[in-house]
Amino acid sequence: MAATIITTEDLYDFKLELFNELKKLLNENTKKSNKIKKYLKSGEVMELLQISPGTIQNLRMNGTIPYTKIGGIILYEYEEIIQILNNNKTT
Image (cartoon, rainbow, N blue to C red; front, side, top):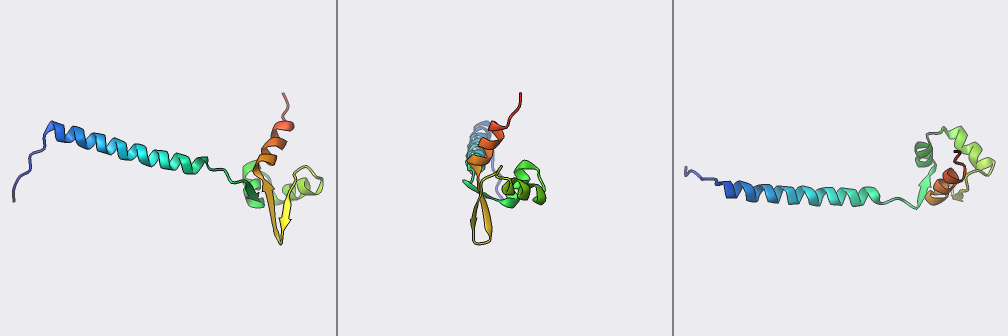
């Protein structure tokens, strides 16, 4: 079996390749996590607002949160949820 000699320059090149690969992976993950869906389902809104199914139903019934119902699926627009939160902010 032949021995391979690794130089300091080889290690430096490996380090640069490794950093570039890690940067590429981090950038891909950041882009994926920055994608915000336009419409959310009830479960996603409940998780976002940390509320129960009964609370989200009450918010729908009293008109606090606008929604769209298609078939049996209820959808909420993400931007409208954020706007409602900002409009009801107290200082």
